[in-house]
Image (cartoon, rainbow, N blue to C red; front, side, top):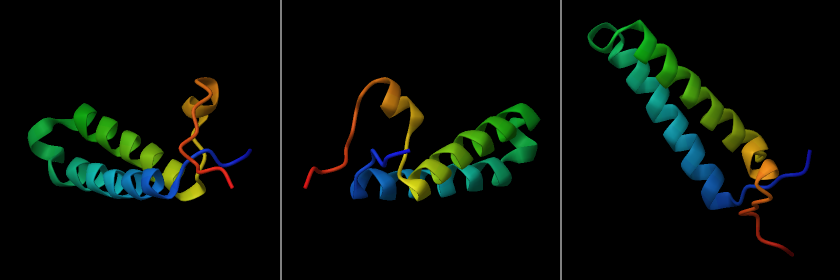
Length: 69
């Protein structure tokens, strides 16, 4: 599994993941359980892909934001 995310992409994903997880937890009672679960799952996916630097969807679409050396 080769990295395919650049530094900016990874930082954005990590921040977005934390924000989505926070929103899911904060609005759990007013938006409902399904919305909470969706926000948390999408947030976790963004957070994990940002941490490891690999996105499966990028691989399928042959996209890489990683700068070539």
